[in-house]
Length: 584
Image (cartoon, rainbow, N blue to C red; front, side):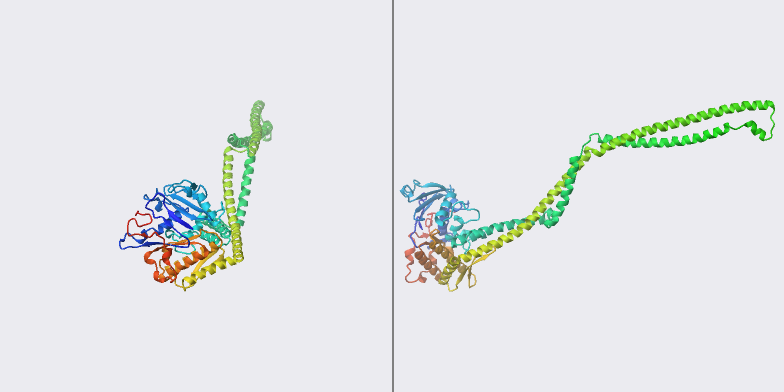
């Protein structure tokens, strides 16, 4: 239980001394209060904020303890925790530092008032770890998505600024579902590890969903298909890539490749030219041989016999002259034949030399072509390398798509199986701990039926998304009814924790919880809380506005004033609030 809340440095702070059972912190509205000096300025909600501040809540810039009027002041709280009295002090100027003392020898209570002698400087994380262990039995170094002190404690001290009065199962309006499931499972006594594992499945499903979205929106989305179809494309692309790799591995770069290629081209051209020249010379030889043949025929012709056959008698002188002519003609024919034969021989010689040169050039061309076939140019090698790079990129891209598609298909199946497995585990756990669930349901129902004739019900449903905790009431929803559900839910939690000897040992309800309730319901709630606190041994702290107290609705044997704290807050004066002065 909480013993006192104090400030060792702010002299105007109104120290709050608490006792066992029901404690009521009243805030009065006097006739001197102005519209600016509302009841909400008295400090009732600030008391809850201060308790959270000292029990390890984050000290945000917006915190009142970081305001210029309070930032340099220390505040403290003394409370019982597992048969030991603890005290802790903290300031807004050094929010990461907690000074912790106990009633052990050398601890806080041997120190002088206002000093820190005997108090140990403790880190923020260490303080929360100690509270988690001592208050809720949490082991150190729990994995992610496990219950923590700061995920359990707020159910016993709801803060209006967190939206804690909107739902019974949430202490924070933006509280994540897994956080609520794990915390409530732990507090009620169910296996919290199951909703923790279900949350991991949810995260994997969200990753898969985002991956599908990226594939759909991105470039890969145009061709992403089944793993089987992508495997086919990958196999074909990989085969092509390996072929290019083999070509490059056996490729020999020839620096003179272009020169040899040009030489081979020149040989072809030159060979063609010589072939054409040979054709011309061969035709010339044929014509010269024909001419030579005709020259031979004219040499064998006997002119005298020709005249005789013609019946012409030549005189002796004529015959003599004719013989001279024949001799001259024979000489001319021989010379002509000799000239023609020379022309033929020259042409044949040219043909022979060309053929020899053509044979030599052909051998050179074959030699060059052999080299070109076994080697390649640097430019050609570069083109092959570029093609290989493109092929490797295609293969890698296809491989990624294939792996992604395969992962999506296999992960989808695995996650579906995982979800079903954990649902089965959750159902088995709820079945095995049926008595615990029944105890929670009955406790809530009894509190609800005692508070209002509109009975409410608590359901705990094991679903694929984890345990669903839901509070229902047979009536139209209103703020008053919703707040009654929260009251019954909180009472149920603290009673169950007390039975299992865990939890903080106190329950705090800010006056905002009673907004919307009528006087009769407020009176019943306070009396129910007082009886439960006395029966189960916890401390019930309530803050109320004086004009909300339904004095005429209390039972005759209920002494409300016996539970009111000596400190009465008021907003009628500048120094009437919890801190003893007004600040922005």
